[in-house]
Amino acid sequence: MTIADKLVLQRQHHLKWRAFDRLELLLMIMCGALCFSFSLSVTFDIFTRTIGHPWLWLQEVTSTLFIYAIFIGAAVATRRNDHLYLTAISEAMHGTPRLIVEIIIRLVVLGVAVCLIYFGYLNYIRGFGSFRLPSGTPIASLYAAIPMAGVLIGLFTIEQLVNGIRNGFDHPEPPEIDRDIPAIDTTLTPRVGL
Image 1: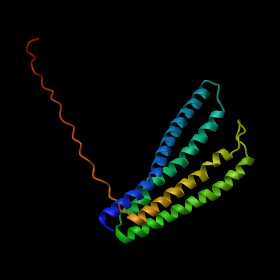
Image 2 (image 1 turned 135 degrees about the vertical axis):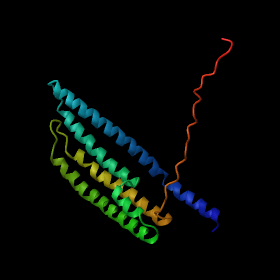
Image 3 (image 1 turned 135 degrees about the horizontal axis):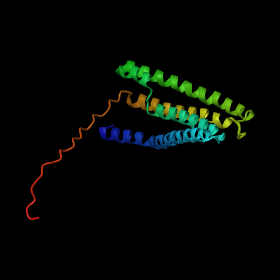
Image 4 (image 1 turned 180 degrees about the horizontal axis):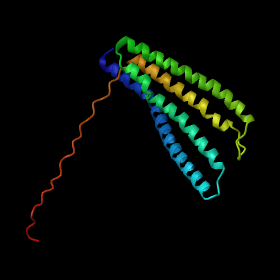
């Protein structure tokens, strides 16, 4: 197999995961919208209580937005490998020890994802027996975020395992491009002929 063939195969491999890039972007947009809506909901809740006419349903909205933002954010953090402590341990290593530690970390995260799916689904099913006040909606509407996040975390972890085992986990950051801003000429030039 020639170098050109390997490059074509690598390109095809990276194209296969483009759908995850789009999914990550969509989840990031959702996280931003959820956090903004959460802040707006809290602001309205405080304002309506201050004027003496509280909207009680805002507490339900606020808690729902908060819970979904947390679990969707956890899935995005998994995709971006943004867990500070776990990445700090593995980035200090190179070669085979790093490969082993990275695989162990991903397997632990995958185990957490399986627990989120299984136990989250059980809570979701049981949540139809409890209701939120004042709307009367089943509390399962909150619990649905747990198995959903588990599926996303599991999917992103499997992607990282496959990519890491095939291509290695040691991917140094590309060097930052130095973008000098040119100086602005602030000298006054006399205008003749005005």
